[in-house]
Image 1 (spheres, rainbow, N blue to C red):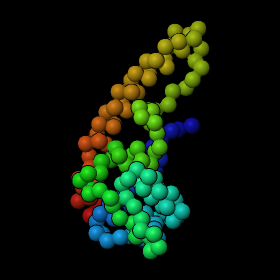
Image 2: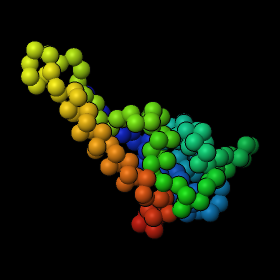
Image 3: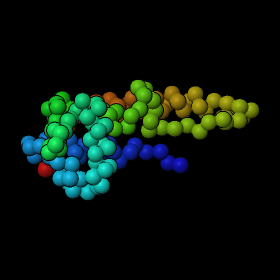
Length: 141
């Protein structure tokens, strides 16, 4: 089975960008229409972003707003908020387990690939950590 980063990541970027661009509190239904997704899914992503301290929603009216400026929000912070991964967990890369240790490849593949995948994960996280929401917003509008 192919393992990919969840679409929650791009939806979260969409949600946060929309709030930043509109400069007004947005309701869950308005956000769901913009993302073109089910409001239940959007509320779930918003809940993850709230737990991460990136945004909040005013009770009652349900107006969503940022708790940080777009300049303070990195893509890595968003990625971690919506993927719920452990620090240093190689979410994007999985290695098959239980290789035949009697085979020279099977004996070493997990350790070799783990090292290579760790480098790739670090490069990805470095890129995401150096990109802020404010850098992307002008490209969206």
